Image 1 (tube, rainbow, N blue to C red):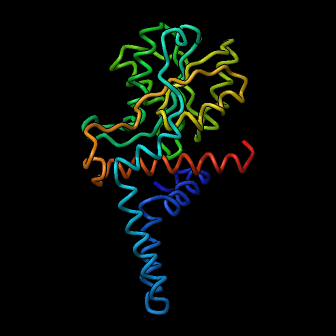
Image 2 (image 1 turned 90 degrees about the vertical axis):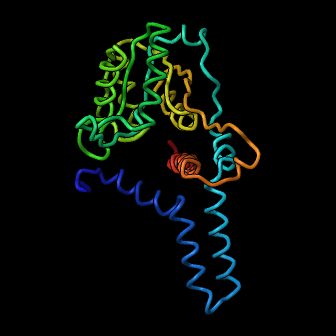
Length: 254
């Protein structure tokens, strides 16, 4: 399985695992344990810091706070949707689905696809799906195209399957759009993803309107927002990954 992963994607996965929760906090705690015999206070401080970090990064309150700066684009309105010429949907992963007997789009991909189908029905605009196979196997955009056709009765006009990163999503999608004379698009992805993704498409000469979906929100409030959960840790992980991704591309000048 590992042999099918591109080197670039594998490096990103390894670095992400080391720098992001939960592994970064666990490594900090292990370092604290190792230092306790020689530097007791330092070791104890790192151990407590790691434990506090694990707790904080698993609460809804932290998840919403980390995503607040990422979800900068409002919901697309009817007037904005009417001005675009095409709807572009970014893939968000795939997973084995034994109940279907095949690979299926992952939760992030399905959330984007569902919202894009809604926008396409409202506007009648053509759709482009973009996403290759960074983990090997069938391209994510091809899986999304199948679901879009089978479950929503919509056939995308373009299916871009070469890209392995968001930057490549923009480059290869722009090639298809330019050949069709398309300049104005609505870009569909999670709200936390668009802050990084949208500028990539604008640098390709496209006029881009954000079409965010799946905002990080929790009901209830009060004590419930302080209780740790796996969902909140996953959303904190995704948010921190986006912040690191933006820093990485800024350092590269892209």
